[in-house]
Image 1 (cartoon, rainbow, N blue to C red):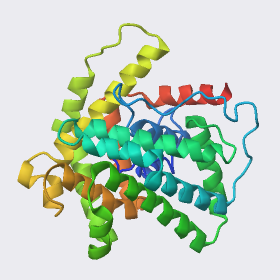
Image 2: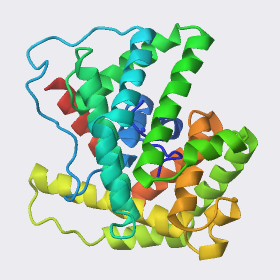
Image 3: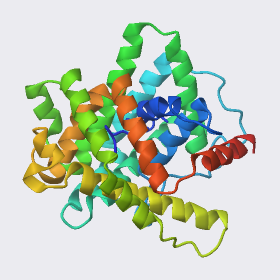
Image 4: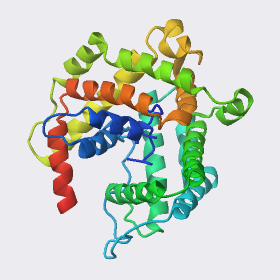
Length: 324
């Protein structure tokens, strides 16, 4: 989950804090999965995918299809993109979709609503980056993210922090609206979680993610294939199913198992899904911390292996798509 996590916040600035976690995990990768590409793959394949009830963002469009993408981007453009994201999340179609998700509380499972939230974030981001010349799909988001990271490498620390805060606040706004919680107000009164506390929390999370019973549960559920053919479409369906299994186990068995003695309760965020959302909200401040990234990235690789997700195969698929 996002550790925001965490996605994420995830390729990102894709909507999940898992980008930095994936990067750390990539340093531990072995075999055919190279450090650079495995990080991107984990970021891509650990974020919440949309279910049939929540369609994924567009992957094919005519917008910018016949125009060459930008070769670079200025940090100021990234800040402008975040401002546009906030506008649409506060007042546009994004806000209406998040409000609809909030109404489903009590009738739709948390994982399904979280997936819809992430889909709404990505859809909004696709619309924004289109105006910068990128295609409104996953490839466009990946290229935009790559260009932005390159621009930030030479930007001043002040600009880097401005963009980090802008991305954090946009993600938090999405969380607050999707789950109809006064998270922004609570954060202003309580202040930020310290980096020490955040690291301690995510160390506990990573240990729980790698608990034998958790890995065994993921492996058992994912071992039963529902794929009837070897077609790419069928494989994608099976991949999405495995990701949903991981997400559900993360919620039920890592964060919320035990009720009043659950991990989120132990960390002081209360019980149930509200406690989980509040924890993710606070962790967004430290999504780029290298140690947190190392904790969760390594644990996520274990979960993906238990689910039967072949990172080497995913790398080859991504390379083939990039050359298409």
